Image 1 (cartoon, rainbow, N blue to C red):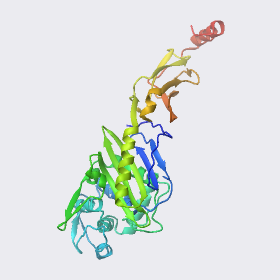
Image 2 (image 1 turned 45 degrees about the vertical axis):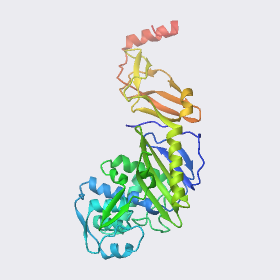
Image 3 (image 1 turned 90 degrees about the vertical axis):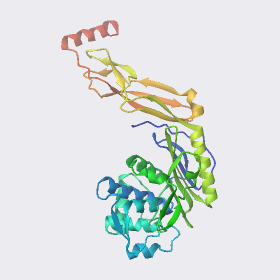
Length: 369
């Protein structure tokens, strides 16, 4: 489904997070933007990109969930004392699915290195793939220097790019996204819980990732769904785990409470009859190529206006799918949204004699006979 989004300037909400973006999943509408384009260290939220690349391998059939990958001395030694650790044993063969759970649920840096080395041959080769993927997804202000998000001057993202990445992962890999909602995982007899604090509350949250370093502060990327509507939020730069939990919950509740999606038309629905000049019929039904859904503040819905306009009558012949008008949606506190209207069927041009008679009719009567 392709939808149309309205971006509003208000309502807003105050939050202590340094960088924030809230996005409606279906329409892409930006509900809140606070420093969303400022470069920031991603910390472990960079593992969303690591997961995206791993899932790309799986979807392409280049690896299977029950395949095993070896734990190198580098993977074991580099992260053996890290707080974020899956605790893979040196020389072990670990199932890909276990490594994914270790990466997502336990935020295991060692799991990321094992996956990178096993799939791409080296962490650098995998990082190169992460950056190639970032370009393909349109992450304009992000660069990855490692697979785990540990501090590096060449490792940076923006809140906007993280929201784009989170949205893409959820859309592109629904068959693997469920790992984000798992609350705990036991490996090597060590049981660890998911670090996403909102998973443990009845908020509709089913992903994605937290992150923390001294430089980055406490951050979180959240995906939540209620009554079929999904919202993505990214908050960074908070001072504690408690603040991260409270602020992300507050902003999420605001997004669901103050905003809603309104479906106006389904793709293919007749919207209007457009006038046709010199056509075999006087009018042609018009529709939209995609479902028309707008995201608006709930308080603005009663004042929403939907208007169809034509610059002039379409001149025959008209091709099916030809753009011949505009559907405009306006509402208080929202930018105008314009959606092209297209012909649902072709219209032939009338013959020469009929065209002459029609032209004469316009000259004499100022209208079509």
